[in-house]
Image (cartoon, rainbow, N blue to C red):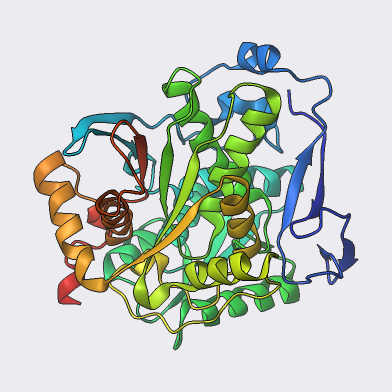
Length: 388
């Protein structure tokens, strides 16, 4: 059974006002909202006792829509791979999100967001994407019998566009960046009444992504790792992971949450720069630092993150870190994952491994630490990124 919930401002936790069909708070109009559950009647024991099934809907008690509105696909329930000790006695696990239906973690977000959409009576959906979110929307919308439109920048990898087209979604290409595609999708949704899945304005995509944190904790027998390394572009995945661990801690399922690492690449380092600004100022900036990305890690190539508030909250609440690696570190990290561990992952996941390597060399990640690396998508999504 779903626990009652309502939406609050992602910045101040106040109740937002209605504006143009989207509830926004006056404090930071660009801040995405957060879902707050009324958990007075929910305990660690009752939450664990409620778990059933193998996919993400086993966490029904802390999801915003009933299971019956979910797709027939099996989303979530991905393995946590124990890769053993790295040199330096750091214990590495990889959360393998490539096992989801469209091959990426974005399926968690789409599954929950489209369940909310169906519950609200929508049959048309739209999203902006650099590829993964679009493929996910096309895949799960097809399974739900919904009409999908995906807006992508012209630079999106051909393999990801092929996947979108295979599922029958309408594909709209804009001559610009992801940020341009984002704005186009929002304008179209407001004009036509189409349900918009865009991260940064849809609070329910975070609710899907947080289930990866639930699974990590459960797969580690309800203990938290020392660190979770999250590839970071728009900020929504790390926001979701932080939300998940935070809710488990509040319920008493975990004694403490792990520290989070926002892994970025140097040209697409807005979250890193904005986090540094927040630390210096002692408060969360209302607007992100805008950058001009140029990176092979297309999934995290974002100039103006749309969920920077959620990402900064997750870093603050977990005493986390943001790390931007050099572009030259991405390919060796991808090769190490493939040739040492048998994991062919997209470049954004390799950015996470490069960040882990850098933090270990700096002594920040220490012997005895348990680290989970989030493998966000399959290498098949963009098989020859360095040749594009």
